[in-house]
Length: 441
Image 1 (spheres, rainbow, N blue to C red):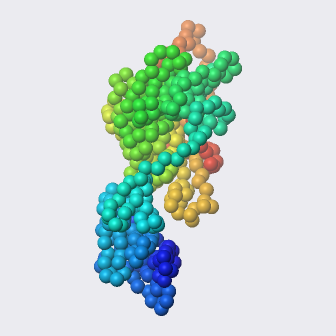
Image 2 (image 1 turned 45 degrees about the vertical axis):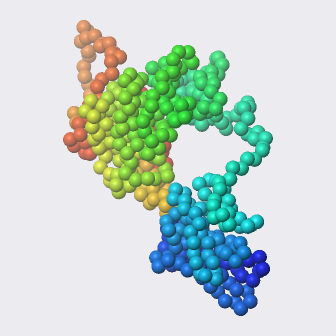
Image 3 (image 1 turned 135 degrees about the horizontal axis):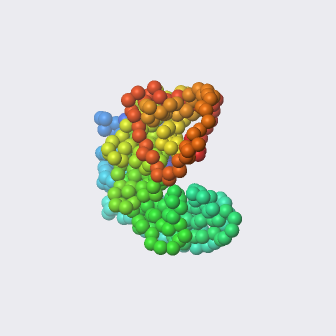
């Protein structure tokens, strides 16, 4: 038996003969539905509480006098029911339609049960139910304000552009620390408010992070020295935002939300735009974003309906997304190079079995990645093009070396024939992570 209850006279036992299958499948109506049997100790007879024609789950029987109380989903959500063995009558006693009755116990002439996170007391005589308010006096030391220290409280970290300081999410505070000289600087100092996921702007002037100061997470952009006004932005997504990435112009930020969607926000106007959403749920969030050097393209990963991850780019000028890869391999972590001519990413042809997170058959499987590069413009040569040393002759005496300009060249992408301009780098496949571009060229 799964659950059993004696009468006060110990002459009968009400019990569930099978464990509850409905804990895994709500409104389960298969061959293992939970029934309540009544065993008579004296003559070993077994009676059953009558069930409806379509079956139902009756669970957790308990006796008060000659009446059996149990919970059942025969009329929809789990509620409290009673059964009179003499008349064979089944009566519904409560009518909760929002959350189920989860468990019950009987004693002292009353039935106590859990529903919607509260305990309720049912009076069989009055046939009424009362929600109980329970207070427990405790010291609650862990909830008291106190000082803590230690690296175990660091959640996220990012470097300033020059590496002079680093910013940390330390136990819900945003703290910057110098590389050598100076003191740590707490930019928030907000007890009871959780700030997290800090990132330093490319111009070195600002730090962006998420804060639940308003009750819901918002994006906050603050001066890196802690002086000046903080700007708050309402992302407008499904909450619990993460993975913020600055655009190189320090005017835009991309991020993902709890619905597995990609967004970017324009800091000047405060407008947030949704770019794309995953087609299906996975417990592992693999969405990543990367900006082009001119801040006009946003690359991101997205799973296809066949659950193969691909790379797309979103054009801010056109307000439209384009695919970079064809979905024949598992692609991840796209990044632009510094001059905007190439896009690098990982690609795997053995990730399929491992991505099936619901299966245990892949426990011994291993994912390997190779590094690929896409030549974005059709008139640019492949970076792997074979080189040849040639004599160029002496330069003219009046030839002057051009001054290097600081202007960022616009990134152009020719999508026609792009799949034929993707090549793999001569690096062995392996377990690679955290792809990042190096210096220009």
